[in-house]
Structure formats: C-alpha cells, structure tokens
Length: 132
Image (cartoon, rainbow, N blue to C red; front, side, top):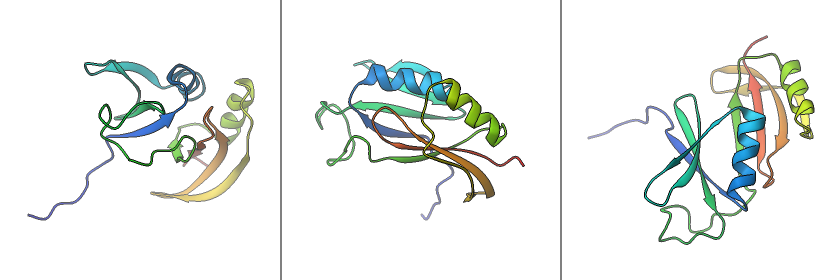
C-alpha cells in the first residue's frame, strides 16, 4: 500500500553537552524540556514536535540514529508568530549573535522573513515568521 508523510514528529540533534544545549533551546527558543525513556533521554518539545538531544559520546546501541552523526551539521528553520524585529530584539537580549537577517526567504507555505543564528554546537538556526 502506498502512503505519504503527514508531518514531522521529532528529529535528533547530536550535541556535545546535553545540559548546555537544552538550556539554550529553552532560553532562546522557549522550548519545553522533558525526560523520556528508560535511560531518561532529553527532549525539547515545541508545538506538536520535539527535538531529541543525542550526546556525541553515545554509542549506536543506545540510539537508533545516523552512523555518521556529527555535532554542528544541522540547519533548522523554526516558525514563530512574531515580527522579524521582535526576533532580532529577543536574540539580542539573550546575547545570541545574529549571523544574517532579517532576510526574505521562501518557506514551505510561502514567503517568510528569516533571522539566522547558531546554537551552542554550531548548528544553523533559522527563526522565521510568515507575518508581514
């Protein structure tokens, strides 16, 4: 039977330090931290999705994930419901360096305005808004 994907449930980011990364995503992006599984892994919940934080030192037996997972290789875009100017202001207040933007881009649903920064592991984080 043929099927099509409905939505993204979660993704896994390989990080150097789970505590530092979890704290950054909570403080800067407002995500909710949760522990899950028998080994109390760390996840960050937002909307109907979550990000699981995989320690770089973990082995393949503990995590069913990429054999080549590298720290700092992700490029993630998050949608927020505020103006681009508010994104810039918030990042500045959090002490986060803005790499680029606000800049017009094209998102999954049409035109967006994006601001770019990096998380503690060097992953490129795009924070975007569909609002004008």
